[in-house]
Image (cartoon, rainbow over all chains, first blue to last red):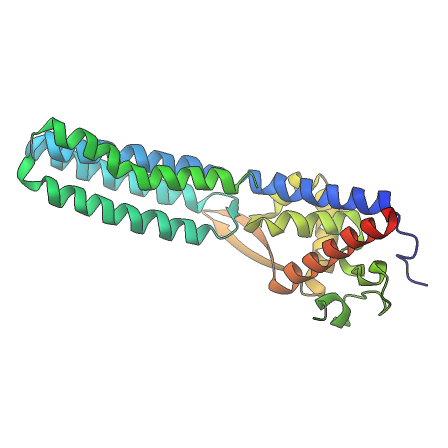
Length: 143
Length: 116
């Protein structure tokens, strides 16, 4: 006779509940990714605003700041103990969409340097792809 | 479609009857193993200590259960270093993911059969 011959409904229910709790518990430890993309979203807005409104000094500061942020981000991510399921897809979607928006914002804004009416909304717009990815990461860590 | 559990000679899965209990997989039927496999199903990989904390077992209990799951091909263990610190990463294999799906489906069917 199978050792499962007497598995009751209560035991099955308990096993299913335990499995769900364990899955959610570990996935929740992957929520660091939301903060990671959130930080880059803020960084992107600051960088774009500095490039558009800060002149040559602002552009230099923005580039240095971005290199520092990326370096810190890579180091931080490499030490995280939990990687969310399909995290690679989130990175790909987030960074490719950000690259497109960031490139367009700089291209369109090139003749408008110093115009706050363009660069402030543009700075916020550049943050949207990464902010959306952060929200998606938060959602994935809770499902 | 044949469930991976019923084709695996190493998993010790139950027999071929039509009752849902026959589809339960011996290799992941114990609460700790089911918790480990379920926990890993929501991530690409996780460090040993994180799994231990999520499943709420001791290092030795988790080591033993992971070794059993690795032996049947459901969990992959990778050892490495982050800086100077040694790390052990755990990940669910495709076979483990399929076995978990089949096992959970059997539990749900069992629940339905018992209630029905």
